[in-house]
Length: 110
Image 1: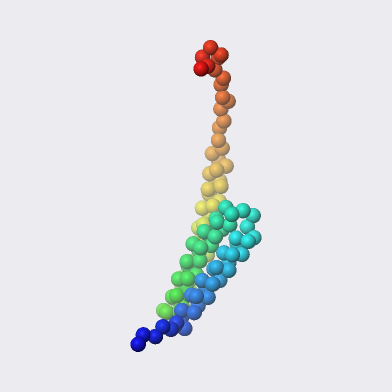
Image 2 (image 1 turned 180 degrees about the vertical axis):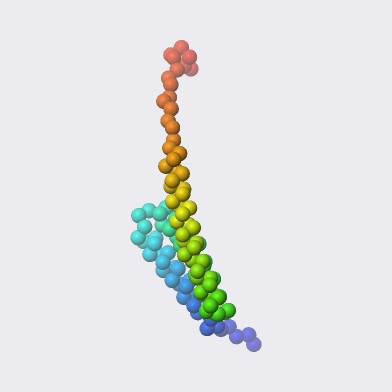
């Protein structure tokens, strides 16, 4: 017969998933708008993948391998911060130009 059981190593990833769900709920409840909550949750979710990888590697391969993967987290966070800063800088340098609408003379209007 086949027995269903959870290995001890799988408990940490399950705990990380539960922690992410709680974090998402807190983000959703405390954000000023659904758009801000979505942006924050997407960024957190992308970075959280590194946390999952770290936990799986530590549980199934070893602590040293997990810690090596954990070094990617600050690098990824810094990369995202630089990209956000750069995109805001580009928005400031490319201000829109506006043109005044011209009115047609009365004889050419339909």
